[in-house]
Image (cartoon, helix red, strand yellow):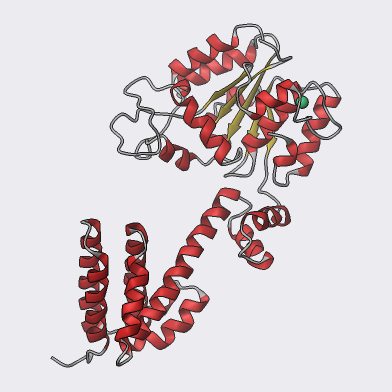
Length: 392
Ligand SMILES: [Zn+2]
């Protein structure tokens, strides 16, 4: 990872580069900041720069032997520690690694490299837990891990000027591990750099905090995050992305999450509007047939997502009609549609629709034939929409 791969954070990059030029690299540094703002990426690029044998004025060269090994995450003098847990009972398919007891980072090294590469150095804790199949537990950095690290760091460097240890999410360290780390910070092995990455300063031991150089990594500047997002999502405009960057608070992971959710919402919305029009209109059997063909081609998860969206629209309609309007949480285009649609939803048919849709979700989970299921559901919908609110 090079400095040029980092989104924004120009002044921090300069600060780090200058520390190398002025030969005042501190051996223990803490990169602290909330969310995916580039803490690990910065520490990584910094370590690569320090060990680059052909440094440029503002970045590592990217081609020397050290840089190439750093890029492949295969440098023998580069070490990582990160939170893990046992995952032997997990049904998650994201990893083939299976750990029954005493989990340490090394057990998940293959997953870690793959994950870091995929997220380009911007990891997210919960997503990492999902990758290694421990999402229902807390990850931690154990004392066994601490001992492993001590063991690794005691040897001379293999080929680099400095051995580098990057500890991601230091707050997940067990207390004993923190003490092992503290000892290493106080009496560092020769030519060793320790870069700690953390989100919450309050969760770190004061003794550690007082012995490291602290670098606050702020949210990514809106303009920089927007231009980065523009390169990834060409279907969205600069204005939309700037709004998303702002909503995400300068966190690249959150921004991407908002984007993928909003794409799904938009798709479900279009599909729902079309469906409701067809169900209400007389003589639209052909239209319904085409619509059913379309949704039958979707995967099961997408079909369920659509049905859950339908449930939400019915709930929002009821709220608009009977409840507290301030509770209605809808997007602009949904609001316009609901203002015309909600009069057709009342307590009587809402209950019927909800029952029927929930049943459809249940059936999809049990591999029902989706074309039949959606055809049947459409006919029911068409009856329910025309029901009188008060008739018996
Ligand atoms: Zn280089």
